[in-house]
Image (tube, rainbow, N blue to C red; front, side, top):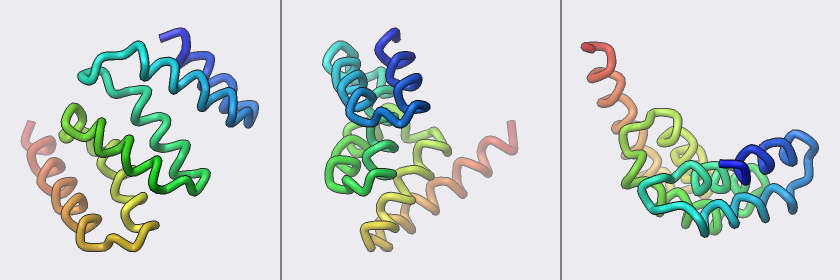
Length: 105
């Protein structure tokens, strides 16, 4: 958790190398069912146009966060940026399905 906090602080200061280092360290310490660091690093890589690295992390984190609209939207943005429109559309459909479920609750 401290690595995540420090990584976010570094990100605010645009210290991307420091943020990446902290998030990678957090990933090394975190179990697969705690995907926060993977998702944060995937978002950062997407924003830095490191698309292949971003996609790999999104795919690793997806099983744990397949019901998170915010996470899926980030993954969808990446796939769209990569020109993988069919896969992006599948994620869009997933978001619509989740929104219907959440509205009923």
